[in-house]
Image (tube, rainbow, N blue to C red; front, side, top):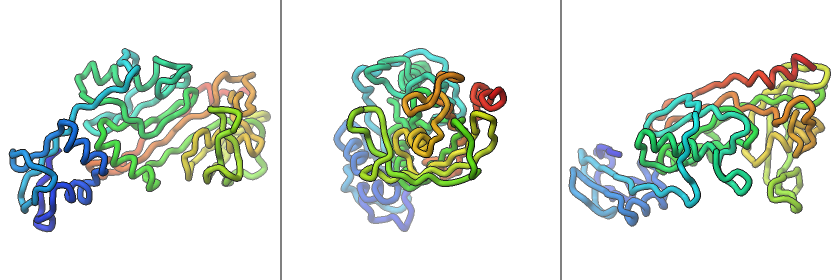
Length: 293
C-alpha cells in the first residue's frame, strides 16, 4: 500500500499517520512493525517513529499471512459475484459451511477460497466479514487481506455493512410488517442453540411480508443487529419458525434446509469508499414453497 503525505499531515509520525489517517488498528501496526513487514518512505526503510514531510511517499508492505492449522486449500467451484484486490463477494450455496468445524472439517467456503487463492497465487488467508450458517444461502463478503478486513470490521461495527434476507416461515401474519426486539443468548444446555432471554444481547429484526399461502409466508428481513441465529431465533419466538429449520421448531416436510437466503449486500469499499451493492435472487426451492402450498 502506498500513500502521498499532504501538507496537513506533515510532521506526523508514521505510527500516528497509519492509526489516524489510514485507520490501521493497533494490532495491524504492530504486525507490520514486528512480523517481518516493511515500512518505507521514499524507498528508504523507516521506523514508525519517523516524522513525515509533505509529498513523502509512504509504503507499507504487510508481512506474509499465515494460514491456520487444519485449514487446507481445496478445489471447489465458487460462485464469485465480485472480486478485486481488497474484497471478494460470493454467492454461497446452502449446505456449505463457512469455516471448518468439528462436524464439518473440510469442504467449506474457507477451504474453497484458499483453493482459489492458491490457483491465482494470491498470498492471503481467509478473512470472513459476513458469515452465513451452513444451510443459509446467498451473498457473503470476504476481505482479501488483514487491512481491508480491519476497515470493513470497523464499518460493520458502525452499521455500514448491510444485508437483507428473504425467508419462508411457517403460518400467516395478521400484520404485514413489524419489528421483533428480543434479547438473544446462548442456551445453557447447548453450545449451538440460541434463545430469547432477558440476559442476552440486544437483538432487533425488521420484517415485511411479501406473499402468503395457506401454510407459509415469504418475508423480507433487515437486521439492525447481528446476533448468531438471530433471524431463526426471532421468528421461532413469535411462532413463525423458518421452514426446514428443525433446530428451532420448523418442519422439514417440504424442505430439508432452513428457508433463508441473503439477497442483498451493501458496504463502502474499504479503499475507494464507493458504495458497493449486490443482489442475489432467492433459490427456486424457497419460492416453490409458496407456490405449491
